[in-house]
Length: 567
Image (cartoon, rainbow, N blue to C red; front, side, top):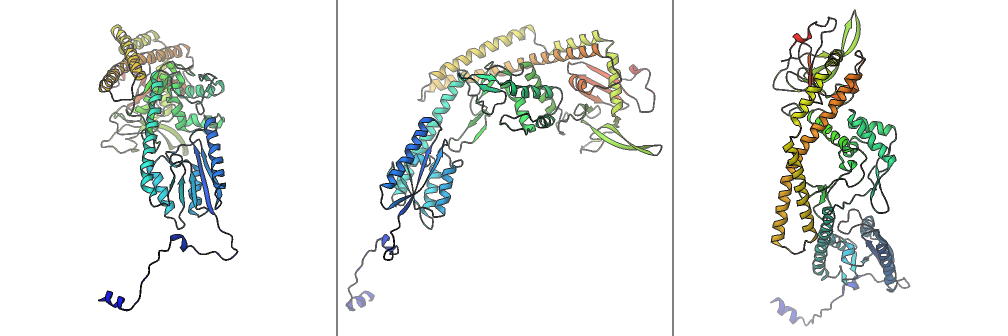
């Protein structure tokens, strides 16, 4: 009915399409025509000379390209040199360009190709859509692909091409990783020296010792083995303005700890400690069985001896272990402020004994004194049991220890025999030494086989090759575990022998039994146990044990110390 009414009116409707560009406001007479403002983006992924040339060519090309367009004008060339395209986080030029685009400073971005803009599909599409949906849309022109993102058909093509670029990036990353692992398997590690304290590179790429920096490294190991904690070492280095690997003079406990753990300072190199799991995010994680590691012995000149490095690792393990009671319930921080810090434990419950400053009065005059007491009995930690052990004066412990040393100076031959017997218990037997040599030879043979297979590895999936390689790696892991256990016992015997010599030399040279030597105490003693009734026991690092006896202040020491037995 409505249609009939329209026709009956005699009107003849005519439809005319109005193109989108006709919606723009007309300029007034004499007004200069506004040009399209175009920004250019150039990026190269490395700082090599060839790539720098490529960067200059990109900039020149964009400038000439825009000059040939009469209705275009160049706003600015944004650039990033020596950065990756798989992630935009560290691309300062790119991020500045996006910021300016949001502020409407230009209308278009022109770039060489999608791969120069981003190899990450998600990032690429996110920025394309974000720029397209601005109040004043900004388009991107990918010159190589001939894509204008303001074209309605561009996004489908863009998704396909960007996905290909992303896969290409993954493939390149995999190939690079493959090449690096092959170098590792051939004993050729990659050890940058830019931030590696103590070493420089010579003209042939070999590591050489930087003697000035090596002084700092040796000082750290010496002070650590002398009993200092990493915070105290860091504080001393900062005070003396010793430079870090980055040239700063501010040291941290963590920096000192990492240096002590670094096997490269004894001449070895463990390769692939961390790995990149995603080539797009570039996030590196600690290598926890993600990929194989490669240990290269005697790769470069050492700054510290292997013996000192191994001793430092044992000391780290000891300090870590001592933070827990036998059940692993109680934790404390390592301290070296006092000679007995982290060295004494309650003989009744096994919990660490801690230092306390107490106050008292004598003849009405207040005074302070230092004692050591079980943390449970002092109610410093919660426990599901009670410990009734009493505190003991610090000077009583020192006096009892000195008197114990006096007695030990008269039985040096007995101590030597006990120490050698303790060392013999952990030493490898003749058969075990032969087995260690055999295992090391087998490991070397398997390692050579793995390296040989790696060198001729094909890029195709070969199930026989994969199965053989997996079997070799599995076999290597089994022998490696056996080798580590045998080597650990061997190093333990060397460690104990060294400390037995230190103890015997100290006893032979000892003349002063009145002054307590805290430095030597920490160097020779592994730990001490404090019992009730002023009974003590000290376990030396060489494996021997000795009892000591104190007395309450103000009373005479007991005459027959041997009558006091520690249960």
